[in-house]
Length: 443
Image 1: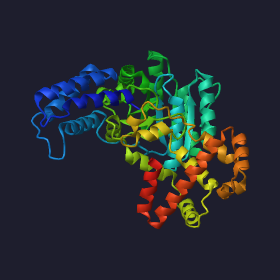
Image 2: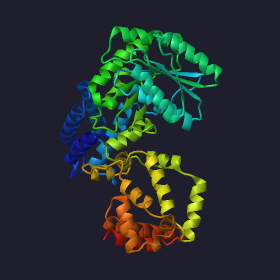
Image 3: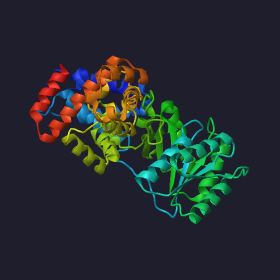
Image 4: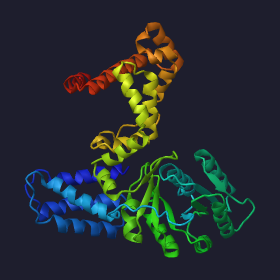
């Protein structure tokens, strides 16, 4: 996420290394690189220029604190300004109304239909809402089919009127259906085009007037950069939407849309899409995103994701098993499933301070656990619960059954044993022994 921008900003701050005071000369040199990094990220020239001017004004004349060097102080100033540029504060979704009506808008290919499903899943699982998805793209039968597939996947009803070519009528009927069936949120997926045109804008404007939604959200593909910002302005002029959703932030995006869109339309970014799975949706926090762009990670979001998957009852069972030396591969498999639900691995690594930089050239596959899972699934129930019984012949069979090598099976067994010992030490308060073991593992 924003890897190229992060790298270039990091190089810009290197200019200040070794200086005891921030001066006009070294600030100008650094900000020249910062502005270049922003322009390369497809940020509007005027926005980039205003941004660096503000940073310069705040940086000049400031004495460096005893615990900071000029580079660190400049990073702090840039982080604060990046946060302001992206909206400053987190803005939640308005769920008032009976039912709450959410109108989705955007161009074709922006990920609008998929994100409608992600939002429905988010509101269902995180907010305990009864959601109705509405298919109002009457021009592409595939769009309604896609919405129905998504609805089935997340267990949410989809309202569609096949053959009806009037999206205003469909949306009004859907709201009546929602009231009759006890749904408290209605998400209307509208038609998109490959480019902004009068017919599309008139149609979505008519739907907007007819249903009077509590939330009108503009979905934009963040990989389109500055074009996304221009499209957002065109939609906002017609709809005066309430917020922006940025999709495909897990791709090789330059970041221009995320950094520019608030300044252009003066509307908050409310959600971001971080992957293909239905769970890959995050509330947008400007301060956390600024920290990630500057390589500081996002520990708060990482902890929140972990807490969402945390099962207190399951944790108690695991603790008892560890205490009795009964922690087995079935338990380990459950832990892996919980980690996988937290999101794609590269995104999770980017949330750990410093890890994003170390992992930038490493291809972290979403199926990173595939080999481990295959090995565990090739074990018998006895082998999973009592790994000590796994001898040479069993290893050979497990390797053959999982399509892996005996060396990979040995490596997993060794890592599992070390991990089990560390978990046991942590429970017993043996921090000194655990540190010694970790040093040994490092060697």
